[in-house]
Image 1 (cartoon, rainbow, N blue to C red):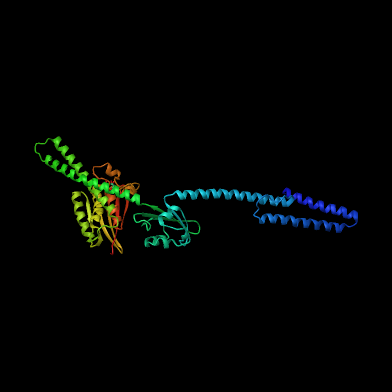
Image 2: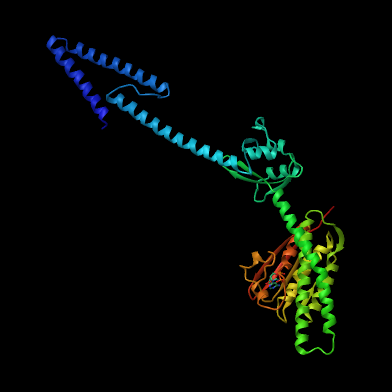
Amino acid sequence: MRPGMQEEIWRVIFILVSCALFGWSLGFLVELIFLGILGYCLWTFSVAGRVFAWIDKGMRGIPPELDGIWGDITDTFNRQRRRHRRAQDKMRVTINRVTRVTEVLDEGLLILTNDRNLDWWNSSAKRLLGLRSGDRGTSVMNLIRDPDFVAYINQGDFSDSLTLASNVQDTVVLELTASYFGQQGEIVLLVSDTSRINHLQKLRSEFVGNVSHELRTPLTVIRGYLETLQDIPKNTAVENKAYDQMSEQVTRMQALADDLILLSRLEEEVGNSVLEEFDLADLLKTIVIEAEALSEGQHIISFDAMSTPLRANQKDIRGALGNIIFNAVKHNPTGANIEIKIEAKESGFFVTIADDGIGIDPLEIPRLTERFYRGDNSRNSQTGGSGLGLAIAKHALTQAGGSLTITSRLGKGSKFECWLPTHKD
Ligand code: ADP
C-alpha cells in the first residue's frame, strides 16, 4: 500500500476514535462522530479544490504542499509532468535537428497529404519549385501543372522517378521521386536539380564521341599502309605475322571507335531520333545474311520471316539486333542452332534471338548491358569483342520505347527478347 494511503487511513481512524472518546465523555457520542466526519469531508473538499486549481493551471510550478493520499496524487502528477516535459524536450531537439538537416539539403523535400495537398517543404523545394508560404494546403498539381507530373503523382506506383523541365528556371532539369510514408498515405516528394549531372554526362558523351571520331582517320591511314606492306611479296614469315596481328588490332580499334561513336550518338539523341517506316522482317533478313557470312556455315541459323511494318529509327534497330545476332554467332561453338523469331502483339513486336550454345552464368546477366562488360566466355576467347554490343542494343531498344530481356543458363543456351512497340504517330 502507498504510504499516503496508510497515512490517510490513520488520519480517519484518529478522527473517529478522538471524536468517539470525546463524545462519550461528554455524553454526545453520535453527534461528535457526525461532526468529525463532516469536518473531514469539508477539509477533503478544500484540499481537492487546491489540487484541481493546480491541475487547471497546467500543473506548472511547485504542487500544493499536501500529505496523505492527496500528497501522493500531486506527487504522481508532478512526476508524470516532468517525464512528459523531458520527452517533449527530447522530441523538440530531434525535430530541430531534422529540420536543420533538411534545410542544408540541396534536394527539395516536400510532404504532401494523401489528397496531394502541400503540407510542408524545405528551402530547397521553395527555391526549385518557386513555392510561397501561402501555398500550404494547395494541391501540388496547381503548382506543377505539367501533364506528366499530374499523371505521375496521381498514379499509385512510384517505383520510377520523373524528369521535368523546371518552370522557374529555363535551363534547369528536375528529377522528382515520390514515395508513400505514414499511415494516412502521405507522400514525400524529393526534387533534385540534375542539370549539372546531365551537362557533365553530355560533355562526357561528346568527348568520347569526338575522340573516337578523331581516331578514325589515323586508324584508316595505318590500315592502308599495313595493307600495302602486307602485299609486298618478299616479306618474311615473321613480318607477315606481325602485319596480320597489327591489322587485326587496327580492325578491333576501328570497331571500338565505331561502337563508341554509335553509343554517344544514341545518348545524345534521347527522345529525338529520326523515325522512318520499314519492314522489320526485311531488315532481319539482311542481318541474317551477314551473320551467315560471319558464321562461315558453322552455325545453323533459322529465321521465320513475316511482313512486319515498323516505325522507328532503322539504323539504331539494325545496330541493336545486329549486335545480338552476331553475338550468337561469335560466342557459340560450331554446330550451335540460332533461331530468330518475330512475334506480333497488339502494340508491337517481340524479336527473339535464341541459341542452344554455351549460355551465360545467370549472375553475369545483369552486367551484360554495361559498357565494356565482357563475359568470361568472351574474355577467355579470341572473339575480339569490345563489350559494347549489348550496351548499344539496350540503348537503341530503350530509345525506340522498347526493352531487352536476357535469359540464359550455362551450357543450355541464351535467349534475347527484344520488345519493339509500334509507333502510331
Ligand atoms: P562483346 O563485345 O564481348 O560481344 P557484348 O556487350 O556484345 O560484348 O556482350 C557482352 C557479353 O555477353 C559477351 O562478352 C559474352 O560473354 C556474352 N554474350 C552475349 N551474347 C551471347 C550469346 N549468344 N551466348 C553466350 N554469351 C553471350
